[in-house]
Image: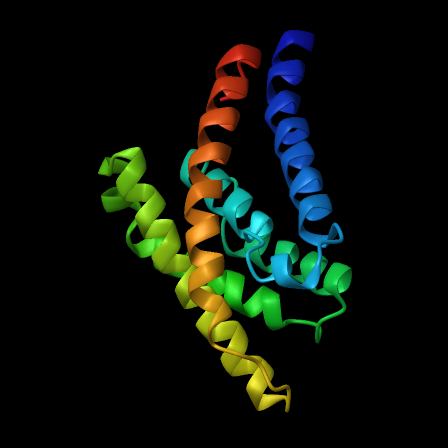
Length: 165
């Protein structure tokens, strides 16, 4: 009985640590010229966990993660939450196709999802009166694509080593 509780508790702790590290990486200070190249770490971790455990991570987790990011970044409450939900909904409908992709194809698909997220985010910000530049979309998509490859390789190895999933 105690063994079963420990094995069920391990993925929750591991995912919480992943989301905690992603939130730190999302708010850590960078120079202005480098800030537009920052990968969307919270979105990458959310996508990773959605693909790894779709029964545990879905729209509710996307909404909560988006609200946490809104609070951390000081954005209007609900903007990131809505954009995360749009991306996870797209992933939900394309789940079987994404699972059959190679890791490089997944990275490019993640880049497309980041462009969709950024477009949704910029649209909502412009509706609120903020003047945002569309040029940052592709820089963020490129670094998020590279970040996805790093994140998936590291997290997969850690999952295997500690027997999380």
